[in-house]
Length: 352
Ligand SMILES: Cc1ncc(COP(=O)(O)O)c(C=O)c1O
Image (cartoon, rainbow, N blue to C red):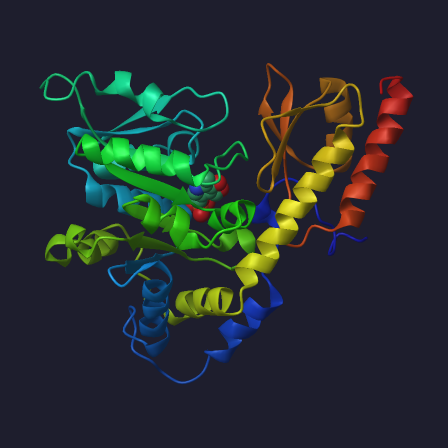
């Protein structure tokens, strides 16, 4: 494998674009169409999202996942309100404070053992409701799958949406890897989003074979009072002029079920990787492997040696936990090479 074909476990963002997506982009690269989303491809793809998620669904394409999260949340919040999220949430850890900056709202990070929230842990955070000295909880934001590679079951999502709605709050879902969750649960997207009480969803695809672009989906059109999201998106710098290149990617991804084939592969490879890593006594898999991420504790010396050959991220320095991500294009041979590398290193260190 040369550098051009080398695949690593650093991130599913490091993988390339599925060839059929590249073809789809080229196929619309002719002639002029209206800009800013008034082109026929965008109209068609928005209708496709209505077919998949329900006729009330309103879709807004953005450039980035961070953009989708920030705009989706901005729309639900006043600056005096807050968002309850897992401490490990991407909006809390990895968006450079973008939600706070653009919404003016406070994020309330909640420690979890596996990246998941549940109503019991949230109850305590509502004690300041109605008290003017406290930011008012208005949104529960969950990631599906979580940043720790775990997946919420449908009942868990329903319990959270019920809790949110009982308390006049909204449920937001960061679905940057939503396809990996769908194949893990073995259900269609609608079952664990619109049908489970999610109000606003960031629907991602970049990590699973798209070139760029994400979608914000609102399941209740009455939420989009005065059509305000279109203004928020423009102010938020996420309105693509040449939107046809985003929408054609989503249309192809959904119609040809590229999302399914890619996510099935990434998840399958993660299970295989976890299984192989478990055979080393000094390696301990952390959290359930339910999507395409594997978190493993290993001796720091081994990890550092491995990183000299192939890059991957350290997740928790203190506990020596590392994150390994499988992608739509990960192959069994990549795992085999990684395992052989580990064998060589553990052998020379005399640790198994
Ligand atoms: C859980 C999650 N949400 C959202 C994002 C979106 O990020 P970006 O703005 O880089 O597209 C990511 C990317 O790593 C992510 O892992």
